[in-house]
Image (cartoon, rainbow, N blue to C red):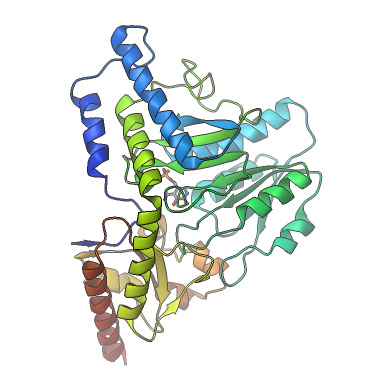
Length: 375
Ligand code: PLP
């Protein structure tokens, strides 16, 4: 099995599994209870929080743990809208991009159904936002600008610091989905709210976090026991928090090494695929552990079905499951056929050059065989 689906999820690092084990096997106390065992668990969670905050690297705020990045994004969006309404503010407009993750787009649509004025900006054919377009759209009604740092389907990066500056210039807040950026590249300074997820950085599934600038915390979204400073209720899992902390620390320590490894893998993969492929999205403004490619006449779904021992996908895991063509590729201007002829290869820390090159050779050979058969 060759695993090339690093944007969907990443293998749990051995160091992470080791750090989590005592919190699964022995240390079961509730971290919010005042017993000695509870305090020990609480202390471990605080160490983990610090590690996640350090890996994010932004100043002037702190992190609250959530059940996923999807939850963090829902909370940031709905909680910010609610807080603005409670304050009686006049801002009720959200600006986002057509290439954002469903966790943002679907939540924004939900809010639009409840009176929020939603603007979904198009992206350019290379996947990047035209900043002049944003400039023209920004006005005194904008509450929130929501843009991801690294796109999960095509790896394209957005100029987050410039976008945040522009949002602030018009008095709006900026929310960044940094799920695919954390641990892979420096997190851009500027956002007021930022969502991350442990399982994309070799941590466990079932835990994410929302970084919030002090003073810009959204209204609570999950009510109950008042955990996470009263902002996000629910008993925290010490095992998941410790795992996230260990993954964050490791990602921080290994960032340059992992980044250099990915750059080499990208080049090896492009060489091994050979001619006839087009890369979807900008090749320069990109995280190179995401190689989204298309080939004229290729049936991406069939390729995935035929090569069962290579794990790769059509775009996002969600798009692959639904059978619908990817909204991100459509946002680049690709037609139905072009998006159906695209596949995404995702690689990273534990991918070896040999397995990636082998997989690319097989992919290319299979695509050529498919072409002959269809001719
Ligand atoms: N945002 C991006 C860019 C993602 O890639 C993902 C996961 O696929 C999410 C948000 C949602 O993250 P989670 O799986 O933690 O809910």
